[in-house]
Amino acid sequence: MERIEQAIFTSAQTERAAGYQLAAASPGVCEEDARALSIWGPSHDALLETAPAASVNFHPLPSGAYCVSRTTASGREYTGRGTRVYTQCLVLEPEAFRRFGNNPFHLLRAASASGLLCQHSEVPRRLEPLSLLGRATAVDAAMLSRATREIGAAPIAALIQAALETKTMAIAGSAAGEQAVAALVSCLPPGCRTKFSFSTGLRFSPRRPFRIVALGTDMAEQRRARRVCELTLVDLSADLASEFPPTGGWPRAILRILETGRTSLLNRHFLQERPDPAISDLNALGLELLAELGGLAEGHDPAPGEHRRPVPCGRSEVGSSQQSHAAHPRFQRQARPDKPEDSRPPGRSPSAAPDDPAVVERLEQLDDLFFEAVKGNAQSLSRLQQVWPLVRSELSDELLCESREQYLRCALSLWDRNAASGGVRPLDQTNAALEVLGLIFDEDCSK
Image (cartoon, rainbow, N blue to C red; front, side, top):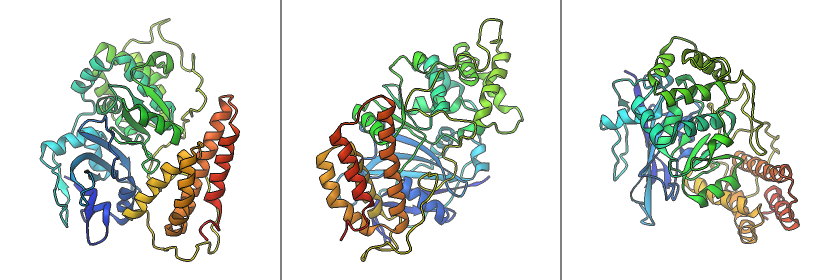
């Protein structure tokens, strides 16, 4: 029985800091993973207003371990300014995760049934590792049957199609949330599930680069998420069959299984001894499943590769080498520019760390200002001109470089998206974008 480490991210006043922070962690959480948990940790107002009582979250960690967490609104912040956002994290090694089918929902259900997901009004000084008995089947047949009735077989197959061909996906609609994400995860082979980080009830943030986010019916948050990130919005209340028809072998097989209710066949397929498949292997595996289901009868299904739908503008096709959200640093980037020998202005603290609660909150504020200013919001631009010099003086060289890279990629992405759609960027927006980038990259702006 493997040990499961735990950690708590919430608003607290500790010996180390005050504010949202990794307030406690068991001894087995290494320093590198602790820093990552601090970056991914949701803070004030992170829960969607339309979300259910809790958000289930999953993402990998730099050490190779995985974090499965649950975020809820619990009590008041220690300052009394509002409702406290409380996240309990379970950190486990791949061997332990496999006992639960690499399924975060199975793990949380077992932990909850064992009484291990208790909330503390005051965060304890020390947390001990957890011991969790049992294991779970690869497929939750009861949950899939219920999701098929309430969401529909075709929408679930469309979700799988979209998840396989996009880099970042937001699920919208009244049925979006834990049930939709749980159905999607359960329909993927256990070896592929760890490639899909997700949250079921958190606002989108670039600091938490989940591959899948469920945004429910919050229209304002859907618009904001599309502004700040190049993501694909999948609306369960729309006609997904025409937008994301299940053309791949795996989505087609899942559609047939859900329509016929033969989830036991899917479970047996997952239990077969074989190497963990890559995402690029799923088309061939889907064809095997279709053959077992008798789905390759003459004239019934298109041949592999036929009727391939082109990817719409602004969406990215996930190729065979795509490995989204494997253990990685805070931001993925293609190349890192060389740092100047010493570009730090007087007064900047070289010890400012990404897990410092004050830095986390400041960066969240900076993100919102930048994304609005680069779209031409004059008020946000004015506020950014005031805030940026202060934030810049507080950031370490590493954080400053990462933030600049992120903002430059975002501005270029917005520009490219506008060009791809055939639109002409208005002059005032062009000037605003240039002014924002000039501010962000001006070495003397804080003098």
